[in-house]
Length: 307
Image (tube, rainbow, N blue to C red; front, top):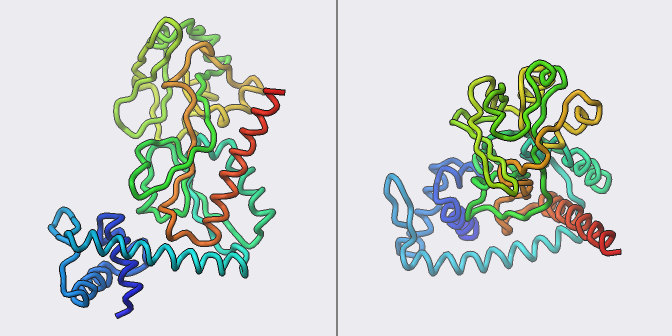
């Protein structure tokens, strides 16, 4: 038995609370993961995990052993990471998931700038609008404004914010009129990004909050489709500002109700990744690059404002 590998497998099973997810992340079969943990328990002559068909839980001995495993693995990973950092450049394919609210704005520029420094790294990019399972998808990093993605197994670091804007085409507004306040939206065809559940928009100003039911004019799981529908004069859409910035500049779309904050105001975009302990050189360097780029830009903007 490779005891160090068995310790890594055991730790990953505990972190993910699943033999199957641990197997998928580690590139092993579920049977091999189960066997590895079983051999570790046999070697120690004690049970580390309580198993049922629905859940896993640590025994008292398991909790103590897990702490020791983490210490050993973290130290070994630190030593190996230092050696690799000193002798190797990042290389390989980085699997990236990104919400359309970020992909339409800063993602392309970020990837291009990183690849100038690390030309041996390529990117496999998946974009999404509603919800994505980062662990099941096997992504290295994810850029998202979805709080549902945050969990105990993921590290989340805030980067920037993205504002949603209410837009419509001049032709649609000429036929149906321009809403003067959020309440007037109930008389219009509304185009929404939705995961299939009932959706409302929320607008706030000094007078309070107004909730608007988006109706059935058009709902799509993709913001690109909603943008096309707005450009085709089908109705009014609420979309990430980077996605429609060009349309607004050309006059193909018009911004509406600028004095009202939509859905709680600008969304915070964060970079998420699965823990700090198992990051490859390319993943770690990309995370550091992304965080440094955005937080550095924020500091520069603050300094310019103060000056």
